[in-house]
Image (tube, rainbow, N blue to C red; front, side):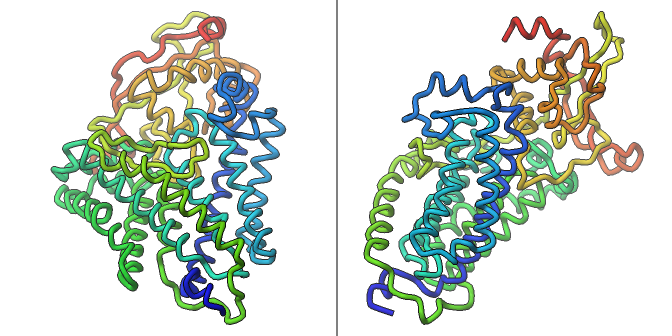
Length: 478
């Protein structure tokens, strides 16, 4: 190999790049599959927040997207399923069978398609892991294939993203809720997190001293270990490995979509796995070197705003500073709720709704409902409506743009909306006459209560969230 390869590329990370790319393609597949299966009820032509309304008021330069040029449910579905197909091809290694430039274009396809989805997804896509997938996916476009060893500067960029994800999450905790500094947040977190998993009840019942150890270990992993990513090997590999173990602990304790998984994928790029590039790999072409260095310079320059935000006492979480989501700021759980509230939606077929009417409860796929139903594991798949229902319980303000439309769709027995739910209590040809919503306080049962009742939750009525509503009334309010 020529001298150019020696300074520009790092053959020691050949297998690290390969594992990273295949794992990232898996993340793309999950994201596109989530979009394809849920979009009609959320942002489709008859969705709760239709894309057509957004593009009518938001110009292309603020939210660049293919759907700014044309939108139909058929077109969106074709884009989402195309993303799934390209992701499968990347998992299978098609990019390695193509020339360098063609492999890069193949990686550009899922990035451009998913950017188009996120930029019209509105509140359903306002999560940090959406921007994180786009930021990582953009760097992956330039990472190369079997025609070139992985460029050093891009490996640095991936570590820089991982550093900002972890360090930003650590700082938001220090800047935010005092319980993180007191090491007491995990007394509550496993019970009040957005979407508990099948083991969350058990995590909640761990001894409190162990919860304090968890919180302290979290601070070490997010505030100290990330710095070690920029040290020589094998220290950097050890740091990345510790981050992976921490993320796997979080995977076991809750459902956080693909946030934990893509963080693990990022950490894989920092591992120095056994094996080197084949001896026959040619030197990187000049055009490729120039392009990689130019984009790296751009991304480093764009990092100014995220770094400034990260170091500010008024640090905000999960914000993009450019419409292409090239460099973003991250963070999670700067504040931890002490009490869990849930919005329970019910319907009745009776003509006159009364308190003693036959009110039947809608059951969601993942969010707590029936106290006897154990939480399920869904991550990395993202149940967007279930997540937003958690925010709706925190404050009606989080749901004011879509909750009325949800109620309207339930009153219509809308097929696409009902597909987002685990169970509707009404047959397809007999929708409810009225729908109401009530706010409950949920708490985990104790070991004794679980044995005696079989219930994982105990819930207490708090107040009315939405009074009994008919279809005509909802239509007028929307």
